[in-house]
Amino acid sequence: MPDSSPPAPLPARAGWVLPGLVAAQLLGTSLWFSSSAALPALIAEWGLDAAAGGMLVSAVQVGFILGTLVFAVANLADIFSATRVFLVSALAGAAMNALFAFTSEGLTSALVYRFGTGLALAGIYPVGMKVVVSWSPGGVGNALGWLIGALTLGTATPFLLAALGADLPWQAVIGASSALAVLAGLLVAAIGDGPHLASAHRPELGMLVRVFRFQGYRRASLGYFGHMWELYAFWVLTPLLVRAGLAPLGLDSPAAISLGAFLVIGIGALGCIGGGLLSTRIGSRAVASWALGGSGALCILAPWLLDWHPVLYGVGLLAWGVLVVADSAQFSALSARACPQEYVGTALTVMNSIGFAITIASIEWSVYLFPGWGVSVAWLLAPGPLLGLFFLNGGLGLLRPSNS
Image (cartoon, rainbow, N blue to C red; front, side, top):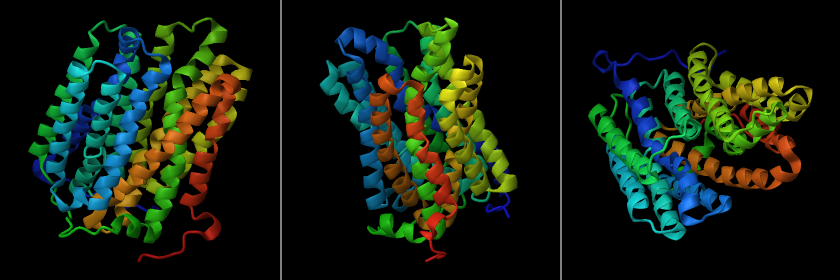
């Protein structure tokens, strides 16, 4: 029996709300990946190596993790208006990003500004999900599918820029991201909090732990943690995985690798949207289960697909790109339904904080092992989705039936 409620229609006056929120999430989270588009220029201009360039990405991750932890402890997304928190965070992120572009003189200052950008993103990504819940609580799986689809497309965009050979000063690329983030904040402020927004009247410092008392939230969170072990490591490895498939065909030029990476990551947006639509029929848990099982199977099969034929391997990578993120929105939907509605923002930020902390371990480990393991490093990612599937469905009886 599906675990999700029938979609609740948006107010008649707000038919543009979901498209507006999706656009705002795409524009706001462009801050996250702006350094990826500028990375080749930074490596040349500052004399960085690839490892130092990767630190710019990790700095954002660390900032985001700490930011979500602060938001969760202080219940900031629940005590204050969600759209105001989003606006302030978008403006702060735009400022930190602009400082990175126009005042950085080397890696040290750049890392500080990228860390600050990550802190600001803690008030954009999970808070944006709360705003969506406040407008469409019944159809949250579908609505969040569009929202995470926008984030996925934003992740892939730097690779498209590289493939097209965009020849702009890196400062202009970063500055454009700041302008987009300001626009995102203004757009969300114009939309406002939804009619179903539930707010907390006072801080509950223990809520970041207390939400785990709820069975549905525990299941969704453990499934999400397994999903996150795989997702970002897969995205980081995608150019290497694509190159492994193109090399036997003699097509492994930089432009072809970048285009392939864009397609493999970007196609995940279709998975998010399709998963959201499907959740209205079979439920969010079923969608998440199928996606976890499918991506876990592809982790195991990937090396053999490459041995069988590079074209078959390429098809497998595209399927993997769809499935690896198709469940992301559904974990958020399950969590939002399972916890007290006045603390949805806190619950989502707690889940995000732990999930993104897990990504650091899987990214570092898989990148370190790739030179020796090659495509077989995909086997290292397989335990994430498979254990996530196991726990999402109550494995080992660790999740006692309880709603208190």
